Length: 120
Image 1 (cartoon, rainbow, N blue to C red):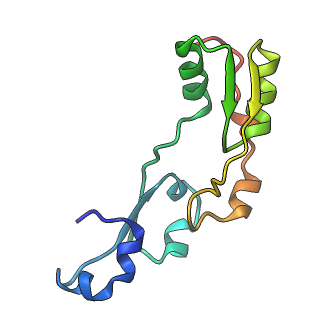
Image 2 (image 1 turned 180 degrees about the vertical axis):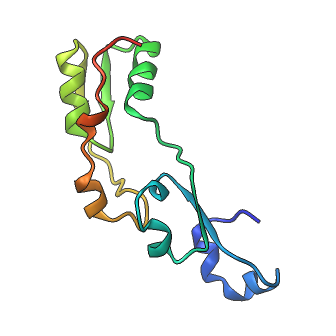
């Protein structure tokens, strides 16, 4: 059964399926201790987010001249895009990240580690 995390709180609904174990699929599963913090039996690394080279490839493929960046490492992405000839700006949104994501994990990540200046 695949269900959103909110389904875990529906204990009556979940009990109808009998004995079970819970797993969580997320890009956050790459971070040490994420499975334990989520209190799940298994963790699978699966993310719907693009990595830095993937984002740049998508931008190049569109032929866009102006890029609006909505979340993630917005200032770093805008800086890189401007340095490479695009008109780029941060577009503020109400997006607050993935539920349960810990800010310490985000602060420790360095997006510059993934910057590639080579053409795809």
